[in-house]
Image: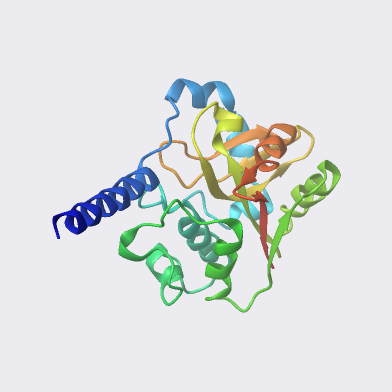
Length: 217
């Protein structure tokens, strides 16, 4: 009997630790953020003027905790296209994902696609295993007001630390070859990054599958 109680306690502790891991903030210092991406006011002002970025009205609802980047990204994206579900709770309602106020180890790109499909009639497409040319083509398309993208990338590949993350794309400054990422984590806030650097962060594994883009149109 005591052994059974001990096993139960160990399992319970493991669950708590797993939840704590999923909820902890990315271990990226402010200095690393400044050194890794561009947040200069001049470029950010230009980026916020891009056709798709304008629909976000220079305002984002930040993720509630470290595991909610996916639901927060969908909620912000839905607001930009006029869907009714514009909070994390609303986009998660009825999906069965992220119960008890957190997403165990976050959501994969495919799981996030399921969440998005549950509350929109728009076409939702998972894009992965993209070549550099295909990735650039989709970045150009991210300036099309009829389309919306969420990018799934490894923070470590850009900032030197951190885990996988989801955020909407605000568009692409093609002349500068910079991608506008509407980071839903308040510690990071929106930033610009060279296309090749973001591609390297997307061209990484999340379990058995590559990361990628979520297209809603």
